[in-house]
Length: 288
Image 1: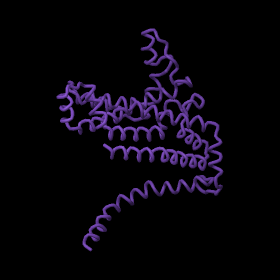
Image 2: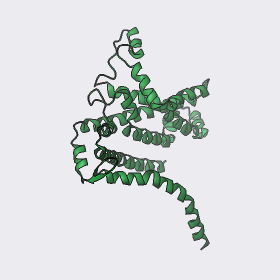
Image 3: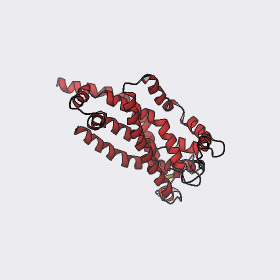
Image 4: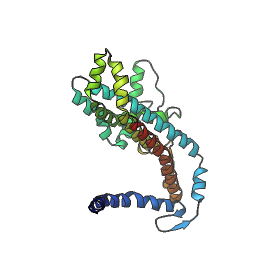
């Protein structure tokens, strides 16, 4: 009886967080699911069933925006994993000014995404941008990074990696520093070098950090909007449109029900990809 009372009492500690979570996340999500089936404005709504979803999936730019979203998410998360781990290995080694270098690596994470987008949209200008001017100094003619359909999306992805790799690095630093030094010393005793230490110790034992970086980066990539909209507006044409930017354009046009249906589709897409991925990563962590 006492144990039951203690368990019931302890559950009350979850109540404040549950209320906040329900009001801020669960309730708005349920309301958005309802409004996705209506034609609504700020004053009234009309139930129209699945019409918003039919119209959303008939959008001309939807197929290209879906491909762009997946390409953007995979590219940014993959580069953040690789670069984050490499930077973390360097920043946990015996180098000078380690603290300063860590701060400089993390600094872009603190800068406003909109400010980063505006800054790089100027730096990447084909005529007077610093990037093309630097390339011209070595005899290379730089492309129109944001105006060429072949380079626009990847250019934004590169800026996203520059801004977000600092967070991945910090996660990897924490993961690497949590690895006991005994493992590295055992490899040294067996005559193993730096590569052996990385391949047999750092890489497998930093797997939880890798899983965290992949999940956070992939979710951010699937939902990315502000940087893309600031730098390209989804253009040229539909070349850098993602699902989030298509939804925003629908809001701008006053199609609130249609845009809400798009948000529901994006929510389901992210959930369908991330939850199985998180479950897979959790099972792999158990095997460690």
